[in-house]
Image (cartoon, rainbow, N blue to C red; front, side, top):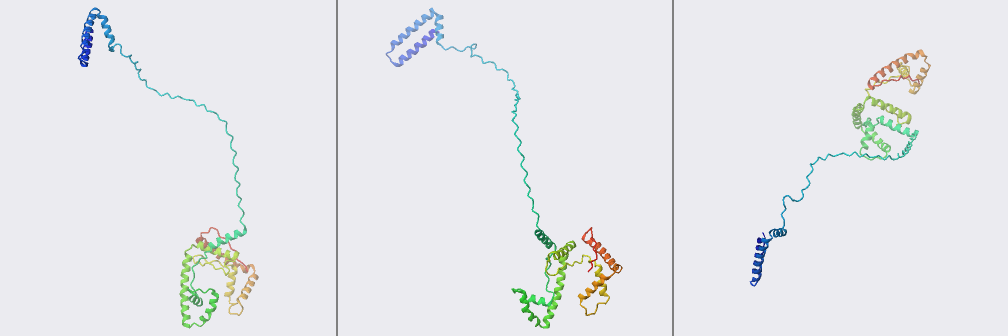
Length: 319
């Protein structure tokens, strides 16, 4: 091996020396001498030279002295998740004191309704039930028709003053104009009757019955309207029964004792009333029995129409 080392070294020196300068022949000769000396040393001490040469080389890693084997991998063990049951030690807090219950709110005591307020509510309720919104009637008299035609579409202001001014004109009308007005009045009466009947039948018999009761109460308690009370006439409702006194009065007028006389009606009514008071119980009984029979017939018919389950017995009024 040493000769090869020496040869290779000699070649390198020679090639280097030749490349640098032609005057380096001395170096070439010196290298040759060293080559031969090295050869002699190798022959005398072969083992020492080998050791020296091998020491200068990088040692190849022998398979026996490889890098330390990595520790054998342990077989992969399946990691089983161990659910640690961590006991949470509950810290027992001191119980909070219960909050005091809120005081119940004081209920507002409703003030009692005053008598005036009650009267206002009652009047409003009765007016609503009385069905005052009847169809407006056309003039049913020649004089009213004349006033209506003369003031229609005009602002008269004071109606009473207009009637005073138109009265002379009406009296001066010719007979032909009076006949025209009378003919128109008859047509108006017929139209009013048809319209009124249609309005009445647009409400149930029960509503008409309650409307008449409301009108009667308004007139008795509150004098509404100020004029005489007008009640709704419904042909579907049975005719109200006559009292015993009414039956007696009718019989006395039919007897002819007070017909054709000059005695005023008010005096006749007063005399009949006095006669009724002077009657004995036996003399009144026929009229009272007839009145009771009419009451029962009325209640039966009214119960069928008005769906009333109870009927109050009316006592025959006396004057």
